[in-house]
Image (cartoon, each protein chain N blue to C red):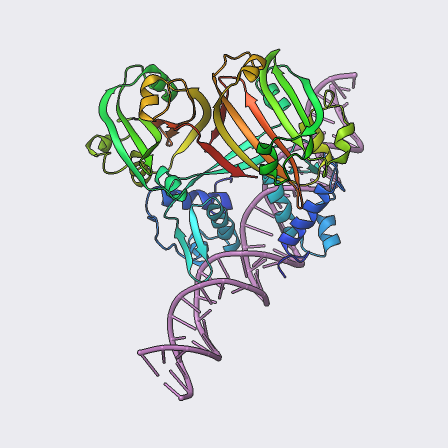
Length: 232
Length: 232
DNA sequence: ACAGATAATATGTGCATACATAATCATATT
DNA sequence: AATATGATTATGTATGCACATATTATCTGT
């Protein structure tokens, strides 16, 4: 009974079929929930649930009173699961370890303070560490922690706990901006990652904050050849 | 009345608060839906919806009879909206156009055929085109189309319709693998993108197939400086 | 003590109903 | 013609109820 038309999964499957097989072309108006419920012999609630999820997935556009239409530009929505680094390495079947390069309170560069909306020259906790997969450099983590939000951070030894894991354990709910890009390595980064200077590397910049204030800004510079994979 | 405790959003907000403020620590067992419904003075259905979405988001683990627990390893889940290129350019407030560089049926290189699970040397339709934002090169699209799946494709003029838009209009449901990486430009690509040879660029490789067969393999090489942004 | 049957229970889902809300349409007013 | 007003309607959500399903706990016989 898992795919019956009177289950919401069944209804959803049938709606999907009609969308994919162009029975309902992009932009066209669908029957109302009530009509579909009649056709499928189920409750409107069931149709609603099926359609709601398709709308959340971006396949349908719904408006009260105006009805439901097949989305014109189905921007495919990709879900990336961002694991913590240790997991990412171990998932590849490699042994993980990390080395703390630097842990020091110092004035942050303006590139960091401006992004975090703090005044220039604010002293922050700067943590740099290198993560390894099977003893090869995997990525360089360069992090700035906002001491105004994380007073305890100064007493932690990030050689024992990674800053990432410490944050997950100790900081309540956060939101964040993430951006992915490609850069050429500078000499320092290249030597740490066993890369050649100027080689292209994949970079993730992440800015995290809670309800009231910025928490941390981090740049993850992956060793050459790294690929971030996902499936639609 | 949007955040009342007897609306599912209100319930969800309250549950989130308790999770974030560690009233319910990771791994701990939550009260049952019925109990929470009693506490909040709402129907179990309402609590169910609130909790269901938190479970989908990975914050809760739910099992029948066993109850609901706060997830131990909240792998943050990022949603990337991948728009079609034209939209992406226009969203930045730039004028978009594109130029077809090449459209030719030819044997595909093994790097393509192997990924698509086709025999080496299969003839495919090769389409290369350059997308512009305000007359500056934005990205290079290098696409291979499986003619066995897309017989009509050979008759299309991809100078008029982009291959991307043509595929969306003409190919039913597809799934795909996407991978993001950083590479150094070769001489040819660099000149097309007005980049310097060897400069780091952001690359998206995408492989698409339907139920039975591979459809297309495409590499999008962005001009230097491109960033892919999202929010958690 | 152990395996297997049986009961208990928390979540998962469907339904009928009711009312809320936002967009649209039709009508009346200036 | 432009604008305000109210009716209409499709979706959004809450509720009480019923039953399905997966899992755990308990009981039973050997």
